[in-house]
Amino acid sequence: MRHVGRARWLACVAALLWGDGLAADRYPSRPIRLIAPFASGGTLDVMVRLVAQKLGEGLGANVVIDNRPGANGIIGTELVARATPDGYTALFTTGSFTSNVAVYRKLPYDAQRDFAPVSQVARSYGLILVVHPDVPARSVKELITLAKAQPGKLSFASSGVGNLTHLTGEYLKVVAGIDLAHVPYKGSAPAMNDVLGKRVDMTFVSTVFVQPFIKAGRVQPIALTGATRTPVLPDVPTFKESGYPDFDLTGWYGLWFTGGTPRQIVQRTHAEAAKFITTADAKKRLDELGLVAVGSTPEEFSRFIAEDIALNKSIVARVGLPQQ
Image (cartoon, rainbow, N blue to C red; front, side):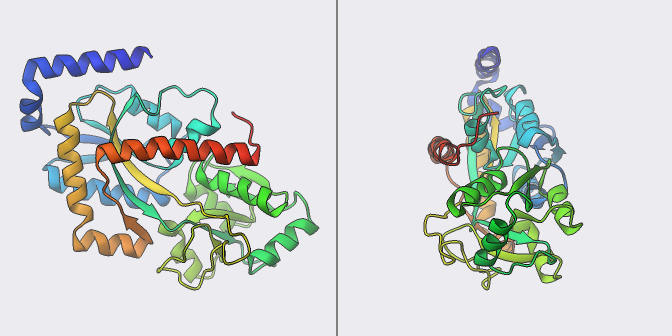
């Protein structure tokens, strides 16, 4: 908690020296570092590039992406928690931000107190379960039959312990009564690479990243984890349609500053983020990626984070995943 006190002290000093209004007027006067806490080349990378470009145009500043992978996003996220709260270090990440709270016994930061939520930028229709083409299954029913015949022999890759791609695999094991071996990676790109290379049998992955591999026939889609089919892959059924009515797990992307960042900087950044995701160009790009624009306010995003932490805790309890 030492960091929280330091962050608040610095924010108060900044407010006294320049005033919130003056801070916002002068912001930004130098490049903004946008930390993406997963390996480059994966699902998050596609979105963070779009956000960095559009946010930089709106704010009139250079937004520099800094990939800091490791520990399911915890390493990069901690860097933001410990940064000076002046609006020049931001975090863009996935729902791993909240799932980590449920999975890890002790994090090096407080997910609600050490960050200033800016906006939930977008959400997904869910993850797609894909298998290597050599796996003899083309539906949920066939995959589960295969897994029951070979308990523990089929493996699934995830973007890291505690990531939604991990929790979804554990959830499937419980609801379907099967045993799958979990193989964690530092992001969706290395996880997918090993599925493509047939070193792992399957993975749950975002539509943002997987479409080209499906169209090229390099992976076989099995089912979508959300409640409704995604327009970008309309032929892929949902788990609900495949006999699992309670299967409804979706991902999302959000933007934060360090806790204690001046309120007007947070609000101005939110305004620019909300502005660009409502443009025709951004909507077209999000549609192509299979995502839905959100653009929530900082207050709405803060409430969502609290609710999502509770949801993830309930999932972890249901699957019986021990805390790390």
